Amino acid sequence: MAALEIDTVSKSFGGSAVLKAVSLDVRDGEFLTLVGSSGCGKSTILRVIAGLEPQDAGAVRIGGRPVDHLRPKQRNVAMVFQSYALYPHMSVKDNIAMPLIMQRLRLAERLPLVGRLSPRRAKVMAEIDGEVGAVARQLHIEQLLARKPAQLSGGQRQRVALGRAMVRRPDVFLMDEPLSNLDAKLRVHMRTELTDLHRRLGVTFVYVTHDQVEAMTMSDRVALMDEGRIVQLGTPADLYHDPLDLRVARFIGSPGVNVLPGTVTGAGVEVGGAQLPLPVAAAEGAAVQVGLRPETLSLDPPAGRPVLKIRLSATENLGAEVFLHGRADGAGDSPIIIRAPLDAFDRARAAGRLDGTVTVAVDPARAFVFDADGRRVGRRPVEAAVVRMPVPAE
Image 1 (cartoon, helix red, strand yellow):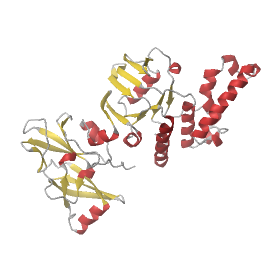
Image 2 (cartoon, rainbow, N blue to C red):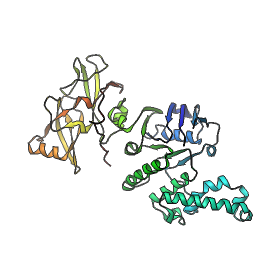
Image 3 (cartoon, rainbow, N blue to C red):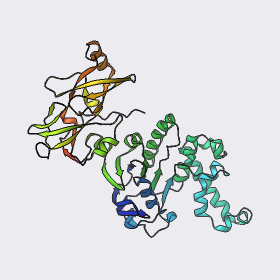
Image 4 (cartoon, rainbow, N blue to C red):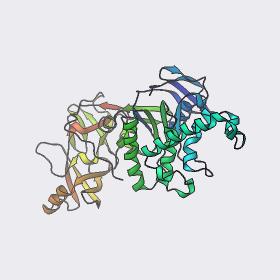
């Protein structure tokens, strides 16, 4: 196991800057996810760590040791690719064993005919077979060792790719969107398997994905990237409940955050006729953007809470909860989504409160205020025991 340090790393391709002085410390044994839209630089960071791309500036250290001068195979990192990159002509057993064969056998010993004459080869191959078997048992693929990749399902190929990485006993696992080729049901299953694998191995994982569900459900910490920079680094709950930038608030969460125009007043922030008593570091009269998570808008308005009037346009019943779509009066006709439990929706409908419009309560403690550039300007600590992060819908 080893900690990983990325120190002001920059990388450009032609005249395009892909990484802009990125710094990141990954703790020993941590599961850290780099998340962001396509082209934000997250996969390039992985390739720089692995030594597949040389950086233009900055340094990479693994276990406190500089590795910039080392070739990829000398860095003791293992990379799992989106495409799995299995050898189609080899069995599962040989695919998993290949890194150890290349590492432990001399060139002559790897030759089909000449190698068999080496007394050392048989001993080394017996050791490799034992290690391959142990990894296969960990991944529950021991019954697949004789098959070729073409005979495997997507999930089985994923396990083989993981086994080939695990057998090297690397200091750091690097994973570049390894679940993106799987169907939705299998992705959910493999998320659980990867999380359990990390717990059992206790090795440092750096995971790249564009899927915020993967980032939120698997990681110890998440680094959200945009345009070659890390916008915010923190736990999944930090990014969800305390986004420091509008880009973070928009990217994390499903359905997405509602963003309404507001104005700074002497009492806080006015949005859609509702006064939110929030501390805001901005001049009175300044235009701001107010973020409201869909589940923080209540169909059962408690007495004394600020309220918004919503003109409804569509309803989606998902079984245990209902999404109500509409537009907020007095807020620039902004689109808005309300995420309501089914029982709250049924009560509101039975009371006749869903006749084309609905009044919802806003919890000021769970609202986000951003300036015109998208930077957070109003913050109020929220007790973790009170606020729970909902699992995003698939």
